Image (cartoon, rainbow, N blue to C red; front, side, top):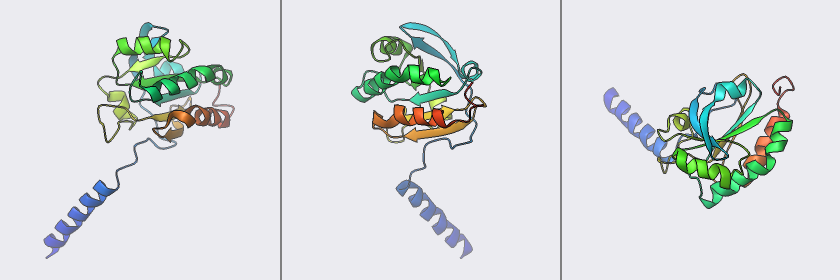
Length: 183
């Protein structure tokens, strides 16, 4: 009887998990994986290091599904337009997707306006490390933005497929960081 009861509980848990998918984001205060990746800025490729960027101040790491899609281009353009505001607060920005580096090299000029780098994560290790894999389409990153404090911990995050509020929310979160966090 006990085994039957445990079996029933296991099935209920399984179906509950299907009905309520897990939230896909690292939480505030969680340490983030320090990654290095091939990236592009202004059409030039280089090796990006999150640890090196954090040594200079807070970093906005934003994940996006696919370069050159309409919404991803809108979001990249919005980050490019706001990059001076982030820089004035001592913060830098990096976009990450599963696109290949050639695609991102072109995207870094066209949509990012050569204002900030975008990193290629074809193997999705960074995307998975930040819990940013799109659950319904696992070949893509979800639209998920993080503010990472210089100590390497999540200060804020926002997840929404609509690109409209990501830049505004990230700017407000960087502004809200303690002055010691913004170098």
